[in-house]
Length: 252
Image (cartoon, one colour):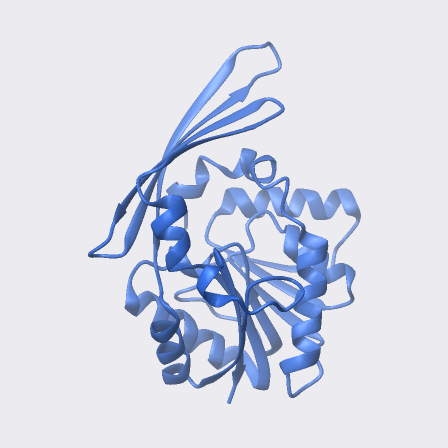
């Protein structure tokens, strides 16, 4: 199993997300577990875990972690980081979040950094939610975030961006199809080699814009109740002006 979209980005993924506050985000998730889960949270599934940064942050807070991702390159990076930190008790699974299988249930599940937006087909979203519901203990919580319609309209749309960090440059072009509500990202990543030369990698990704009503209907159909929609780590709720929604849904 392979994911060509991320096979080109795995080596630079952490550098491109260097400003992400994983510790603050993990504390926020813990607060949501405490606020909305009907059962004690001891085990957590991290969907679309990437290189494992959120997995490690939650593991540090005492949760029994299972992490899955479609990209073997991302998981290879995650397991290398686990070895460097001496962490041996995380279960890493190379699986698709539309068709995964677990060995048992978990008391909470998370999907961070707009992983749900990458499910560009409505049926893909429905399959994912159905599987999360299947492996989540009754009363357990699923927390995920999505990029909002405002972000697709005003930040993505047809704008271009350049991201820079030490030894890496990412040129990012967006093409937003308003009718289909699909944004195509054209990425060119330039990484500096040890000898001073540069290596270029091109890749293409897509995200779907989901509104609150569509997400709520999909969650309710899958057997969840929406317990809260937030816009920041302090549980802000300015939904109309936010670029990201954090959604807490409880398994019924």
